[in-house]
Image (cartoon, rainbow over all chains, first blue to last red; front, side):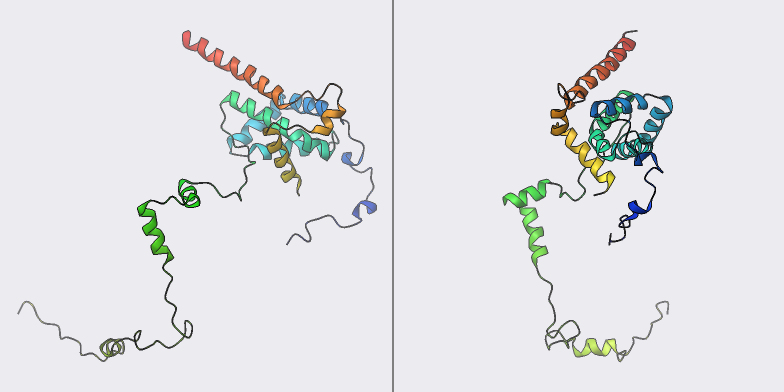
Length: 183
Length: 59
């Protein structure tokens, strides 16, 4: 439920529009200027160390880019729309410098909901099945036996336990007396 | 859509070799930071690294 995961309607009218840097016109409005600014900024020792450290702790490139862009937006350097446009080039630049340093990274833009294509799924889709797979499928396709009258229904005569089994379940069977093997 | 989702979508699109067309039309002479520019940059940077490695091995 994401009903409350949004700003309150009209909140912008209740706030002073000059309170924050992102309320004022941004410093950079040009795409190339923005990318240049971010690349130059990333060449600073503190920034590059932060980027490499984040990548080394398995943070996705997309997450690193998001945090860098959020910094720029919060300082009023560029607008949110321009930041989204700049995300691609910045991610590409980070991937290049990470390759240069030999740091393994994940872009973090993969689709998690995508059903991965496996040899088995492909064979099934094309109708090509091995003998082993067919046997497995036959076993899987056997539907479980559901008792008549529902799961709580009384068993039929065929399903009912024999008299001996019922007596054993009720503890009415004479137990064998233990024999002394040593005697 | 959240900001992070938009960023991911933008990265994915750029990696597919697409550029913002409206921005490209507005810029005089087209935009400079294209996927091709970064491909060349990658070749230059990683090419230099490979050359350095080969020089070290020779020494």
